[in-house]
Structures are given as structure tokens and as C-alpha cells.
Length: 100
Length: 156
Image (cartoon, rainbow over all chains, first blue to last red):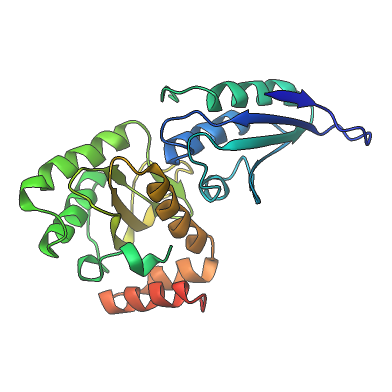
């Protein structure tokens, strides 16, 4: 897993994480992602291959079809984005389904 | 993946009347049994598994849509049925709104990718406002089936 800010002067933070959840990014996992991102006033997107999702949208996240082992790219900006990405990274990296 | 690949036409419930999440799920599983897609011996276990899954968090995903589901060893491939609840149903959805369109999904236990692709297919079409609107107005199984076919052909 890596974390870096792009050199363009943007505040966009990008991280790479391998999805470990045993059932992939299924509905319950998506709802947990939405819950983690929900209170955050900034913007978070998750990329999976050539697909990209607004991390606050259940419908978007389900359409990533992210199976276990998939490399995900987390992108976010806004005040406190590091904390949100930390939480997402921790959640998506766990193998057991303790989402709630 | 196409909706008409895994939705069982004979099990569609175009005018579901249910006063609870449990009742809706029982009727939908019963419809799959009546259509010959699941065995009577498995019916109660499948209903129980779907209800248990709902206890972990509602599958009411917003936009008036719910996708109750489970994985079950009797399923060789994904099967699904659709129900339209014209009066709306409290499904404890994430957005707090009633549900009008239900896709119930049963998947084989060992193929999470197929399950996710089934969910992706359903939600991809349900993001379309026209598709949702027309589904909510459908009152016959054939009308629902025609809409699924049109969605598969991207005509909606």
C-alpha cells in the first residue's frame, strides 16, 4: 500500500490497496464504505481497473464488481481526507467481514 | 451479464402485496419454488438465510430498490426474481425511503464474482430513471419481462 500526493499542486491524495474482503465489494461492504465516507465533506473516489465510483454512492460502488484480490485505487481530497482514507484502507484490507 | 439470463420470468411478482420485509421475501422465494427453480425442501432454509442476511444490514440500497440475496448450495448458477410493490414497503433502506422494486438473488456459494456481476447488472439498469419509472408502473409479469429485455438491449 502506498500513499502520495501528486506533484501538480492538487491536494488529491491517492492510495493503492489490495481488496482482501472474502466476498469482495458486496452490498454490505459497499454500505460500510458509504458510511465511512458519508460524514466527510470532501470527495472520495474508488477506481477498480477502468471503472471509477463515487465512494458515497451505493450504486456506483456495486458497479465496480471488485472481487477479492483486486487492486483498488482510493482518491480523495478535502480537509481530513487522510483520516477517511486510513479508515477505508483498514476496512478494505481486512479479510474477515466485521463491517458492522 | 444480461438480466434475462438470470431472472426467472415465471417467478416475477408484478403486484406484490406485503406488509413486511419478511412477507415479501417469503413470497418471492415461494414464487421461485412454484416456478420449479428451487426445491420445496430448500425453501425454508433459503428464506431463513436471506432474513439472516438482512439482519446484518438492509439490502434496501436506495432509489426505491432492494436486493435481498443469499448464497445457497442448491444454486448451480445465479437465479433471481423481480417483485413490484406498488404500495411501497418499509425495507429499512439505507436512505430511509420505502421500496417499490425488489430483485431477489440466489447465488452459488463459491463464486463471489458471479454474485457481484449479477448485482452490477441489476444496479446498472436501475440507475436509469426511466427504467425504474417504467418498472414501477408495470402490472403484469409480461410487462416486467419486456422491460428487462429492453434494458438488456439498451432500449430503455
